[in-house]
Image (cartoon, rainbow, N blue to C red):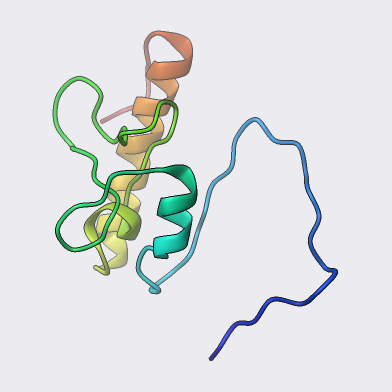
Length: 101
């Protein structure tokens, strides 16, 4: 499959939250570059999974999990990281979280 831009099809939608579910395509470099997110040695979004600020990238209010953070992997890892990242986003927005880790 080869995706190409369709001229004149672009539009903007105001949003407070945007989630990219991209499947097994690995992080698209242009997406990470557009946000200014630091990358690890493998070209994935750089974000820790431990401690204070886990799943946060180098850009304020930008979090990364699953394939975007660890590279192509099993769906169970993406689900686990997605749940843990959701908890961290909840804590970031609310000051605490009652979601399970």
